[in-house]
Each structure stands twice: as structure tokens, then as C-alpha cells.
Length: 294
Image (cartoon, rainbow, N blue to C red):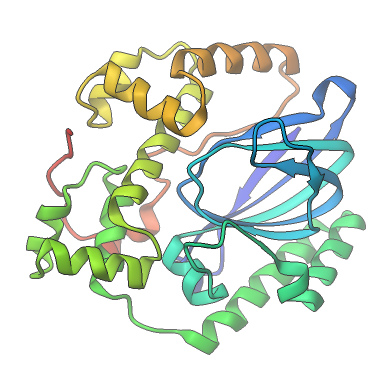
């Protein structure tokens, strides 16, 4: 499996975190994947056959060739068959609202229905193995959407950016004070401007950070992770991780170590450095705020 990330056009940074591409061949033993909840809204274009379900025990359904996945608090089970190519964009939730009219109640949008022409074009380029052409078409499309609705970020977007920069540990009360609004006003603006409440976004940001660090270093001590990411203790981290993934962080780390060993050194996968992951939000985020410990 080869996974790579690419930056979006400079005008889209602050709305789009990154573009990514992955190509993999799935034999009988490598068809099933478990996609954990993410802290960004994911847009994905496919060339290949994949099936999905969000409900345990449900029969997987064929995935659309182009899909927007909203913020979710539950894992997504995906079964892929044969050769799969996927090109995606990770959008901050306010970016998904501005560029694609996403609403927090929409867990999944079939983009091949809402945006049929560009979806067909990008998927056709992927089928031809034209990664550069597909990325350029995706970038051009999102830029065209940006020109239609470009606007200055509101106070809640600034607060949300600080949540990302603090890896979900910033206190909402402190952010409200910095922005000269009441906590209640900021919460209302969060839903209007960001599309999700601040507590849910903070949970997802911290969860994915734990996930990514365990993926990169399965032997990392959970006590150290709990301290670094502002959890009250290891038990608090374990409860949150299990609530969002249906498994303990220890079980996930063991599964990750096993799968990495099975794939061998030829598998190419890079976990972003957390210190640089959200660097494009520095202009939005402002000064660091007090850590959240409860």
C-alpha cells in the first residue's frame, strides 16, 4: 500500500488540510478495513470496488464512487476487492460547510449525485492511473467552489482553529474570553459556523491524535499519551477511545503492531507529524490556550 499527502492550493489552506492518495491491491486476507472516527470531513473519489457499513452485523453496501463523509462518532467498516485507487481531501468542518454546503446531520453524501460531472471526471482519471490529472481537477474544482462563497472566518472558526492547534485541549471558556463573547454565544456560533458543537469536535481531535500516535508507535505508553493530550488519567483516555472505536487503545495498539508486521517493510505509510499537521491554521488560531483536563 502506497499512501501520500499533497498540500492544496494556498488559497484553500485554512479550509482544506490536505489531499491524499492511496493505491492498494486487496487479496482475500486484506479486504476488510475499519476506518475510525476522524477530526476532519473526508471527501473521497474511488476507482475500484468497495463496500461499507456503519452498523455492526449489517450487510455492507456498495460505496458510491465519490463520497463526502461527515464527522462520525462510530467506526466505518469497509470491504475492498482487488485493485483500489482513492484520492481524497480532508476538509476542516467549516471548510466543508463553505465549499460543499455540508451539514452536521449528514453522515454521508453521494457526490456523484450532487456533483456528477466533476465526480465522473476525477474517477475516470483515477481509473487511467493519472494521479496528477485527478489532483489538479480536484484542486480546480474546490477553488471554483471557493470563489463562489469566499468569506472571512467568524469567531467560532477562530476558536475551532485553536482547538485543532491545541490538539483538542483548549478550554472553551478561555477561548470565549479571548474572543470577547460568552461561552454560550460561542457554542451557538460553533454550530452555525463550524457545523458541530465544540465538545464533539474536541473529542474527535483528541481521539484521532491518540489513534495516529498509536499507529505510528504501538508500544507508546498510554500514561504518557494521557498526560500529553490532557486526559485526566489513563482510565479517562481508555474510556474515550473505547467509546469512539469500540475497542480499547491497548487492543488497537496490538492490532496495529500485528498488521504492520504482516504488511512488511514494503508497505509505505506515513503518519503526519502532529507539530506540523495544522500549521496552516496558525493565522486563525491565535495564542495557545489553557489545556482541558476534564
